Amino acid sequence: MLLSIADTFIKRPVLTTVCTVLILLIGGIATPLLPLDKLPEMALKQVTVTANYLGTDAKTAEENVTTVLERQINGTEQVVYMSSQTTNNGDTTINVSFPTEMDRNTAQVLVQNNVAIAQSNLPEEVSRTGVITQKQSPTITLAYAFYPEKDNNGKFIYDNVFISNYVDRQVLDEIKRIEGVGSATIVGERKYAMRIWLDPNALAARNLTAQDVINAISEQNIQVGAGRIGQQPTPSEQQYEIALRANGRFTTPAEAEDIVVKVGENNTLTRVKDVGRAEVGAQDYSTINLFDGLPSVILLSYQLPGTNAWNTAKLIKAKMAELEANFPPGLKTAVALDNTLFVAASLDEAFKTLMEAIALVFLVIFIFLQDWRTTIIPAIAIPVSLIGAMACAYALGFTLNQLTLFGIILATGLVVDDGIVVVEAIAAKLSQGMRPLQAALDAMEELTGAVIATSVVLMAVFIPVTFFPGTTGIVYKQFALIIVFSIAISTFNALSFSPSMSAIIMRRQQEVHGPLGWFFRWFNRIFDWFKALYVKTVKFLIRIRLLVIPVFVAGLVATGWIYQITPQGFIPEEDQGYLFAIVEAPAGVSLNYTFDLVNSDLAPIKIDLI
Image 1 (cartoon, rainbow, N blue to C red):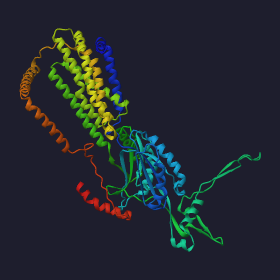
Image 2 (tube, rainbow, N blue to C red):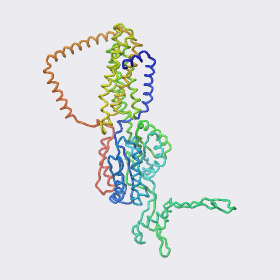
Image 3 (cartoon, one colour):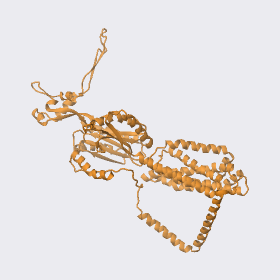
Image 4 (tube, rainbow, N blue to C red):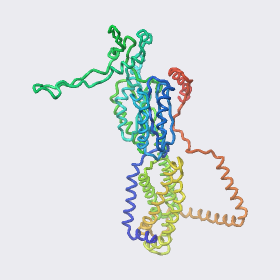
């Protein structure tokens, strides 16, 4: 049965051509659809739960919020590990990690179900502000900085509160809607809020507490449905129906200050303005952002897993250029971090290496076979195998990353072997006086089993790599399978395309004349000399084989020793063009202290970089 496979394609060259073109079409369509990435996705799937216990310290929030949520989330199915952080302003963040192969949406639903169970045990203030459960994207694609210019007096035109709210209302939603963006967040966000400042002396003089003010605001700052006038059922002469709207929530500081906190025995009213003041400010002042020394707001864009990072970045940049045209005068934006530049540079170098490898393979084939007809067949088989492997990669959800490209580069030297063996065997038959069709049939009758056997042996080397557990298996699975797919398609080509095309275009090799013929004769003389030297060396080593064996064993020992002393690492370190500095301030210090400390520590670094 195996021997008849090649015969079928040799006798039906149209079928062979259709199969080859089909492989090229499917692979050519799949290649641009493959997501671009530096490496395969290795990070654990992560779901983040955030909550805020307004006005509390870290210990209170830890005991009443973080612990309650952690105890309930702890029983979630397939959780690998969980970490939490509670800040001194009442913020709680819990990161729940799941296996890499788990679906993100499923992980989010599992966590959200347990959070819903725990909410009945949370303080009312926490339930009112809400507990947010969301998927955490692992990769920051782009970071944009928004900063103000200075006016003629040297003052910044806008403050961070205005910039933050402008980005939140005019930019954030536009970025989130872009294809390939998983999420977008504002770092240093300062949402507009009505801030109530209380005078403790005025509160004490009126026998009030801050909680009394909070209760009064909660009771009176509400939006209610006021109903309708003339709503059915009504008398028959009623001709109009009017919807009523009540002014419930305050929108200005003056309205907030008019809220009644207490009614005295003589009906005197104590209002917010009697015990404090109201102003429009930011909801949170716990972070400060600087971009090139300017106050700024940072917009982080996270890539949706499985999408093309390069295309996503291009779409974001195009949208930002469109939005920037409508920015208010004096508001500027710039790319603070672009992770796609490094990915693009890495992949570009890998593509160059791939082209160089293919060119070298073509050159070596031509120099050794010394016939363009013989060279063109394996030369065509190489791109067919590699492009076809891209279709298999797309079907399995792989990305086009450094490891898959490295696998393709390595496969370039493997997939050409079958084609070379086939054309050399057919060339040998032709030199015996056979016609091309008969030469192809006879050669494949001898080689079909050998071609399949050698390919299976090569696959057996790489397939076990795909079963490695953990992160190592994730990293090298795509690398190994790309090579396996390339070898499989190469084997099919060696049984179909190579003998079929050989029967059509190959002829008995003729002597080459001119400069090329002179080069081939010169090369053959040198190569024959090397072959003769090699034969003499092998014969000599056979005579002293008792000495060769200890040298071989010593080589094995030296290899093991070098392996032990060579520095090891998971992935080679590469300079991505940026650095992170982490500064830790003493416990209990203010944000101003930390800000001054960071500026003083980073000043020498800035000078060195400039």
